[in-house]
Image (cartoon, rainbow, N blue to C red; front, side, top):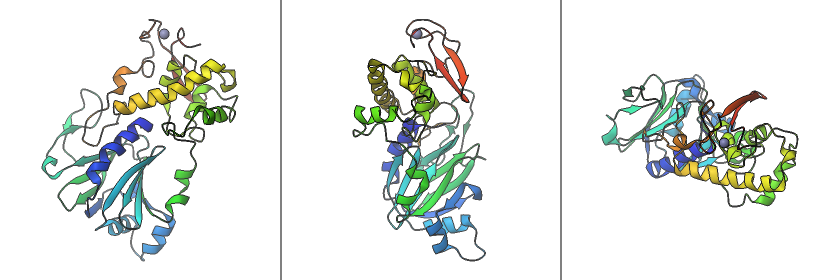
Length: 305
Ligand SMILES: [Zn+2]
């Protein structure tokens, strides 16, 4: 599942491409993938029309102004009174092709045997067609993601945007604020605590493993067991690992690909995630994985105490 670095990559790479693009038409091939906020819906809905029809109708002629991220949510701002929220969930992909690239073939999965394909595929559920001939495709193999049209007015109240802890890469996220979060769930295992979006936004399975390796602490340790030195290292690890992962355009694990069809490269330098049974890159001890609280945490039994 895409985490903060992957969603940040999508946002950073889509922003310059979508800016000032005017929507000629939206084709919704899988109606359940689109939704509308309550205010948006009641304003536009006419008897006999489906949400998918209304979604496409409302967006026709609209122009994109910006693309932003909050936690794992992508917010695509439009010049009018709307914004589109996109959540990639497990396997969502946003792929942008300029007019001259429409014949391009890409590999949709990060495995060598994944064939090169043209878009749209069977997993393409929504297509934005722009007036300059370029297109934005929303693919989602497992169909857990969504695109939701909301008005600017209802945006601040959208529940999906208000239930998150601080943004870890925000300069305003300081060690002092981090210390306040430590007392929130003192008995939680460190991995569960890091992955709790109400504590810190955007950290999932991959980056919690990598951050805990950096901080040299085991995923199962309760938050309150951290010594001062370990707290500092954990805070530093959150910033460092997420920053490095953004610089590498995220980890292409499973279905994550960048908007031009390229893969993120951070997966190549994972220290523990996905490396269970392999030797630790630092000490050579075999990386272990442990299931707890419904999660699997991978760690080095020697480097992590
Ligand atoms: Zn080790």
